[in-house]
Image (cartoon, rainbow, N blue to C red):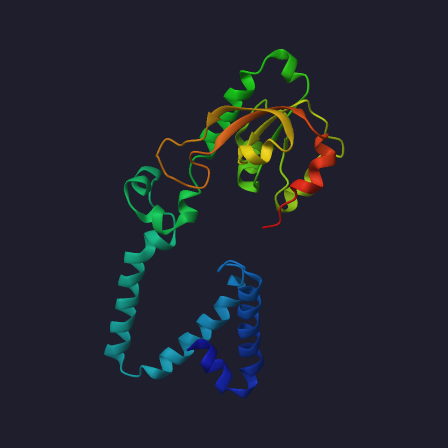
Length: 230
């Protein structure tokens, strides 16, 4: 109703057109629902004005407000991650809100990759890097990893943060399928499997950690091939 209220008033029609254009643009581009979020307050404000005008009786306004508060309290755990990690794991909310599940397991991922790195022989440690398939994995390794070698990631803007020269003889890889890695390395060995303490089956759960040796191309030459913008 917020958009309709704006459209019906000539002085606000441009704002209504802007809201519609922004929504259609992100829909056509395949953007996520929260991408156009900065424009939502405009719709909420217009809708609130319409609601106040539509509900003139005081008792009815109070009923609507009470109902809105009650619905908000009921749905709050679904809208915001207010539950503890264990409560979230015990509930089914993480199955509905996949992004909630994706909030868990990052320290464990870093610990598991660190264990793989610590288990490498000294000959491998002389020239080793870590390759993560997405920015979430790379960000976790950068944040929680202590004493790890350079972490690189070809996903989105992480692609541009890679060192100019990359020619490791050994690469610890997270998030890729073996069939793909076989095209890049002469030797691919699984060294672990990612899990988390709560058993939340997010995108990283069950993903293999690989040790890759004998690159078919130096990593900096293969880098454009790995670039991912999805």
